[in-house]
Figure 1: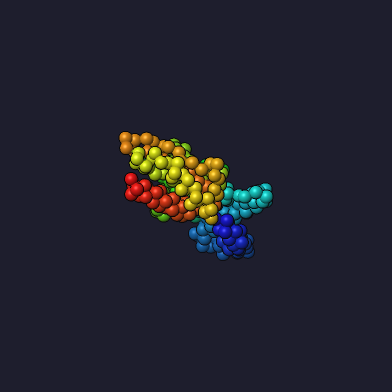
Figure 2 (figure 1 turned 120 degrees about the vertical axis):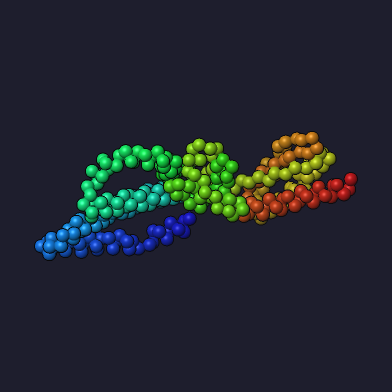
Length: 293
């Protein structure tokens, strides 16, 4: 994500320049050839409509640029999560869409104020019909301008767990542990159980498994075997004092355990590889014990 932000910073603002050149050309033509323009009945209204979009859009782009510069300058001595810039970009796109709609109305001689007044009842009906989308959009803006989460974070929302690859007005786009793309409505962050697994840049992951009761009585031996196999693992931050198997559940003929470990990074792929290695060691231990008994 940092690379993407750097690319955005270096990208030349071609669209802004094109808009600025168009405004200069249209304004010059409007001043230099007023009689010729008025001679064509539809041309003055068209120019008015185009300029009513370009001028606010240029001002908005300039304000956006200044805000992002000030934000980056203020936070240059600490890591920036990127949500603020993402939110500003999304909001700018929405406002540009509103400006475009207003300019179309002006082009066709429709007063936007009269249109809004006449559409009040219809707007209320639309608000009711699209209530979920509107609340999702508001939730999306809150997420974008907050420090709760960011693109790249690993989160759990309700039954969904994965890494955020995008935040839109409607959804959080997650990539789960199976590399599937999951679209989670923004409302879920505020209405369902929400956990940010990367809030503290944690590389913690858990391995869960169960053993028969006959094997569980030798759990201390299993701990020693796992310690010996993991203590020098290059992808683990091993703390011997904190290494122990936690009992999660005791059933009629089994015991469920959980082992918490810290990897050298918070990569999902690395965590899955480490989990597979540990489970293979556990299966080998269980098989050896059952053979000997």
